Length: 237
Image 1 (cartoon, rainbow, N blue to C red):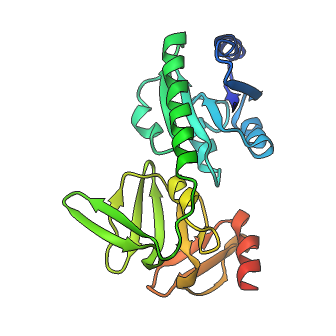
Image 2: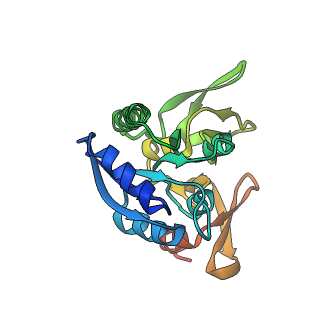
């Protein structure tokens, strides 16, 4: 089952979407919200696999909501505006559906979500530090030992991989790397960055109780509030 959440300010649109979703027995609707504040609370409480998300919401819009999350579930955008399609793929986007929604387009979007989730399960085996991975960026390619990767920076559906003197941009999401890398070595410090803990040179307090870490290679990394307590325990700050 795919545990899904609807975030949509229009009551009529929520009703219509729920009616359409009745055709899809693989979808378990676990909640609905009419604004970003309610939506964020439900995401944190229910940890859904998939969100049907409108972009124009009262107060914060859908993009602002996703920007506040440490981990973004799979997203199917449902909106009346086509001009945000490119921006939408900066997030963990499955599809971008224009209103009025049709059963046919919804079926294709849900099939994409199922395919993505099956792929995630098939790649769930963790890589070890001694594993070697093939990295390709345009005409350049490398075989890289996982232990040599010090930093990964997410950029939508792409990730910049930092190792030795290189930092290629590859077509894999940061979520993919979080799934396959050993979490005893690689730590998600914020929504956009994963670091290799063995490359941490030092750290200190930052504003609002956060931490800033410095890697051996010189990069300075800000740790989110949510992850600060976890990393303090790891390093006994």
